[in-house]
Image (tube, rainbow, N blue to C red; front, side, top):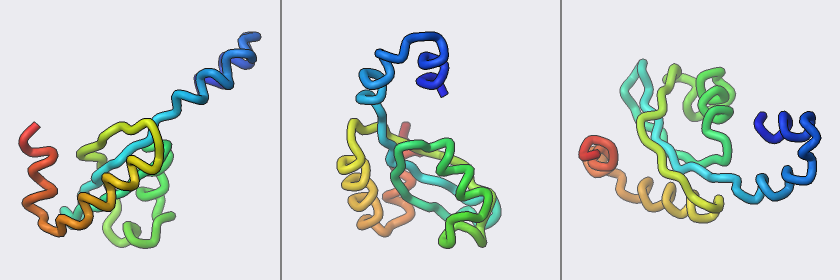
Length: 103
């Protein structure tokens, strides 16, 4: 949205520079219905949570609504996905909870 405002304001030349600073997220969601966790990564956390809560993600549809309870920022998607895989391998709910309960 910010980039579109810049284009409309006549600052079109700054758009490519700003787009290089895109951030990527590793995130953990918690279901308000079942208290289950979902671990994922994305380049747009707001859009992604909306997709989860709209029932557009098959694996989270039965347990909606979801809230973001934890996230980490990365410079690239590869690092965010690596972190996602790392945390998913823990498989322990207590290990995962240590990420956000000890903050």
